[in-house]
Image (tube, rainbow, N blue to C red; front, side, top):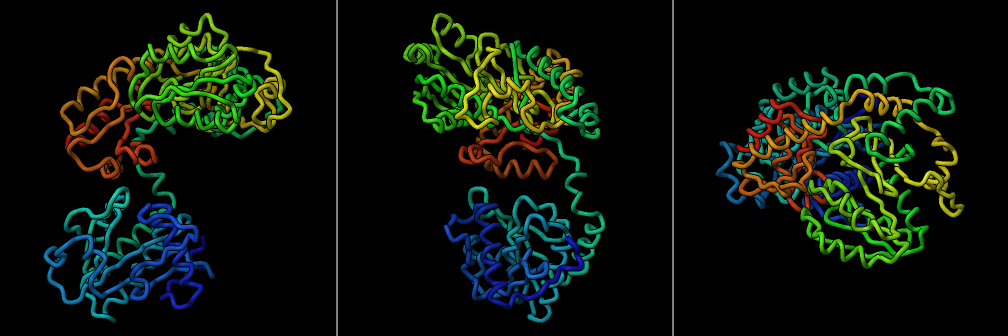
Length: 534
């Protein structure tokens, strides 16, 4: 984006208005989820005919907008009864709404141009107070600009806003602040800002892994690449006590798709275990192969009862299969592994397990498992981008009716290098496996987990899973007597702590999660616990 090509103006053409409706939809329907979707992908504001729109254009394209409206009732009047009692003395307030900027243009110059022109309009119309509904995700920015909050938070779900105001006479302060932020190159400030990741991925990588990722890439057909790939494969197999594996460019979902196609070739019904989001995803993946299967499903976050599990396994015909998630990340529970191996010891069944969030975080023994999946990030502490498929049988046939990229037998036949591979990603995972003391890692994660659980006993949150089957790497928090999970997640981000709360399955249940996969320090967890108690 060249700033000199940008123009800020009052929208006055049919094309500009049409683009405003589309930008409005992308921002407030698809991103903020404030309105329901529609097939036209157009959102016309209910006050459209009374709005004065300021737009920023990059040549003919509208890339940012701001709407001003001084006719009562405001949208805030409907959200905040008796609005005037919250406001300072003023003669003619104006409501500024629908601030929207295309993602690739979200830099301070865009915001400064909109604010500059908006304030220029104030003396022309006699406006002496500007009201906004500030998204909770940007409260720090709005405060920094001089906006003052008033009244309670308004909105619903994840579309929550704080009413705020600013005096137009503070235009100098506001624009000066924006100018200062401009000079800091906002396009990279988010990367420079110190945030502490408490996410299950991506995890924080070590300097050694960072250095391995940063070298010049080299050919995936070279002898050096084959040696490095072989070292990585041996390392992950040794860690999980597995016989063989293929490391494939792609995600964990890709790795599970590969397994689903292997199960489909058994031509026999199977069983999927479900007690969370990722068990449900396995069911959806095998369903796409038109393979018949049954499910054993229990409430999210609950242990699968062993008697019911034994009965469900008994109902699977010989030659069938069982597929389940070991660490159900959506809840933080550990599902049976050794017990299922024991229950099926005298049966001719194929066992497949999603170990994506357990390998590298807790001890995992895949001996006796036919297929399993992992990824290069999460507990293995490399960069995301590699899927790992473990297989007990070294000689898996190729299937000509399976796309070659998804055919495990094809990868085995090609010695793990069927298509273009990333030497950087392989170098990073190899470096991580070489430097990690995984038994010590398991111990530290368990210690941090025990301390944090004890510290949160007198907080306003319940922990979803507890006991022996709770994975120490992920705690799922349920608000009890505090603002909802989304508000809490936003507030913690403002304080520098990044937790999981944005996923649809978490939003629907009003949950947020703390992941210890990056092994945060005791000081970090103490600060987090103190904030969660407020």
